[in-house]
Image (cartoon, chains in turn green, red):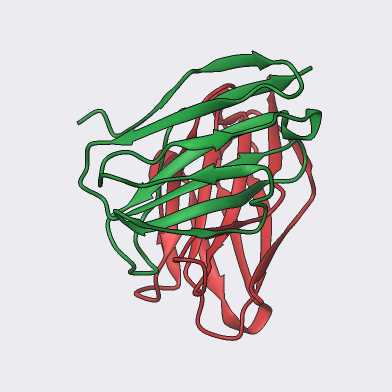
Length: 114
Length: 114
C-alpha cells in the first residue's frame, strides 16, 4: 500500500490564481481530512469527509472547496489564491468513526502564494 | 469544546538525557489522545495513542506517555534522547464533533545536542 499520497509537493501561485491539491488513499478508508499547518500554530482542520459524496466544513474552510466523488480521492480546491493561504497542506484518512482510530497523513503540499 | 495545550514550544536536551514533552487536555468526555512526530519536510507519524485501555502507553522509538485524569495530562517521555529524536512533536485529541478529526496542540520542537 502507498498509503496517503499528495500532489504536488510544492507549488508557487500568484494572487488570484486557482489550483487543486490532490489527495489519494489506497486503504479503503471512509474518513478523509484536509489540514493546514502554519508555523507555531499546529494543524487546523479545513474540510472533512465521512464517505463518498459527503463533505463538511472544519475550523478554517474559507477560500477552499472540496469534493469526494470516490472513496479514494479527496481533492482540495483553491479558487482565488491569497497570500494568507501560504501554508503546508496535509491530507489524512482513517478507516471509520471510532475515536481511537489512527489517522494516517500524507507527506504534505507546500504552497506559496505571491 | 475540546482542546490541547503543549507547554513549551521548544525543548532542548543533551543526547542521553531524559525527554519530557508536556501536554494538557480539556475535554468534557473521556478523551482519545495522540502524540504525532514530524521530521523536517515530512508528514506526521503516529508515536502512540491513548484509547482508555491502559493509562501508560508505549509507542515507537522508545517513547511512552501516561494518561493522568486528575491532572488532565498526557505527557510524552523517553528515558534517553538520541540525535535522531530531533523533530517536532504534536499532541492531539479526537474531536467528537467534526467527524472525529484531530484537534492539535501548537507543537513542541525538540532539539538534541551531542
